[in-house]
Image 1 (cartoon, rainbow, N blue to C red):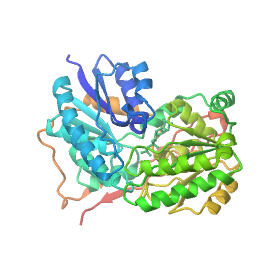
Image 2 (image 1 turned 180 degrees about the vertical axis):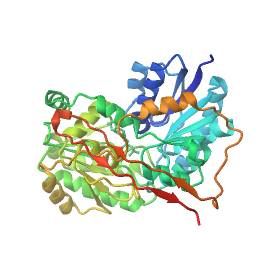
Image 3 (image 1 turned 90 degrees about the vertical axis):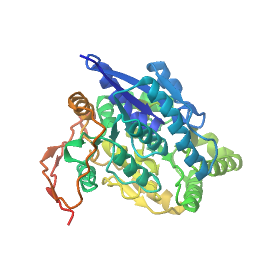
Length: 421
Ligand code: UDP
């Protein structure tokens, strides 16, 4: 039997946390699959934390694509898409994969999906059907339309894709693959203490801050970032601050950060550690151990809930996402308010909540990839006039013992009849 060549294209750490578990699953199923890894986007940039190094140490990388046009403008983002299409065209034509897997809602992912679909390569999209603010929400839905198979993370996402006209047999509820990884991590007390120590903090006595540019609301990007800088001055605990991603607007906020650092050297010497990137497993342990996470990273909305860590969502970058109960959302920030919120959250833990998966996504994905008959010539969209019935069942969410402090929850899924009329 010919092995199925599955090409995983990773563009940044934000997608690799979801794509790596699938890649590992495909490597384990090597009798059926020939997985190929392509690395691109911010992995290859210093500003992206040089994440290519970690990846190259662990895996064979079939190709690298330098796809990011340097600069801080919307034009650079648009040109990066065109550069990506050009690079991926050469790479896919030479590697000849049977299938390409892409994740999420980023402009680099759009370039991957445009190329693979134009080359008639079966395209699989992870995490379609969710909502995000900024241009990302439009990009996510555009990638959906270009993809042939959808691995979605929750029931709402599945329903949304069906409403968007994707054929029911192409939309598979898998959950988020990063949860598979979370489930396997050692969250014993000694492990938390030792990882925290290596990053200079003590469990449950520090905050994580991750704030990226909002590509649409550029004024609010600066306003919210200034409020975060003021928070640095008055936070009673140490802060692990992560550099913003490479989206337009990042140069401006990095400049603000550096100016602030210059004028508040004591604060940065004693309380604020600036990081580019922490390997995913360690990042997860820090997230588990933090007093709270603050910012607009997807980790605030999609991941902190898994550990019951309080989360403070800032601004509109994640607009429309389903917010688990550990998340407090603020349209914009006043610094005094942020300090008060932080003080309020000290000592609070939430029951872990698995809004975006149950930790068995990879097995479901592998089974579907093995069974699916890749065909790209005839993508059929459901006519908007045809009513679709979605049958939902009860589902038991993940139980993770995790020192005995996580609880089992029964999630009642609502039956939805999607009717376009
Ligand atoms: N992440 C990581 N190491 C880090 C910071 C983040 O592995 O140092 C992971 C995190 O767990 C999450 C993803 O990267 O899965 C989020 O990345 P980011 O905030 O950069 O982007 P977003 O998803 O908000 O676009």
